[in-house]
Image (cartoon, rainbow, N blue to C red; front, top):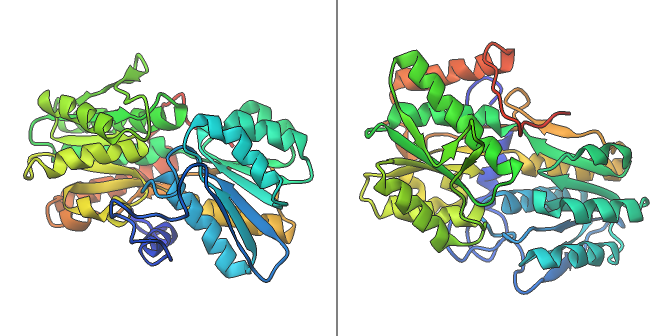
Length: 371
């Protein structure tokens, strides 16, 4: 990937999702990357005494999105290092504190929590247990800097979403594209900001007037499902945007975003989507024929790396920030749309990626992470 737009290490890691020992292949509606159920917990043994553990947010480990990809990072590390693992899956916000505590009680050496919503409970646990290393995916609060055993794993998806917005603007036939979120978190609105700015840049370059429905970057407000689990709510939100003329939808909503993919699939080719967090043609392959591309976050690599660092003694609390430059985020292959996306549009997106990395193009989002 370092020589092209598309994912290298992150893609190969994402592709391995389909090969991981799951109940069924990712992309099926019943797939599961880890035991699920009401606040379920499980553990696996390894030859090492070192134990890495993970707590999901309410999306669960089979969300075809960031929980699933983060979980893969832990299982990758376990396979490579021969370590023990433990995990607990949350079903609601009420589970977070007790689930983190259950991993503390399980004698974990490092606990990785997944999602912005676990911020407060992760911080509290890290302060209370300085002998245990922690990492959190998708948040870097200023208060973390003083906590030596808490490492943020964050991603500047405004950069990659800018590219996705440019692609959407170049592919729309109606002149209207749309985005919506699960909940109004900075880790959601950062995608929406970048997407809207990519569309705006396309309009400037091409003298077009493609409009973005579902997000007003100036007001920092737009369409939200109110949940990351409500697929029917996601479908209703997508259908509302489609009824206004949008023919490309960019859901930033975890499992709720599957509702948008369902709407696209039901449209007989009139509506398509761009997925987030992972390569949708891998994690939600049932809908690949309607996914133009995806904005990925290399959470599996980041999680695997922090576990390795905790084991070998090189762990630090310095934030990891995934960017286009370090392949921590990017745009996945076009898969079924490879022949449909014009060659000149592909070339323009490659050039835009280089311009963002060099600083020639600057993206403004209040939600962009800093190291």
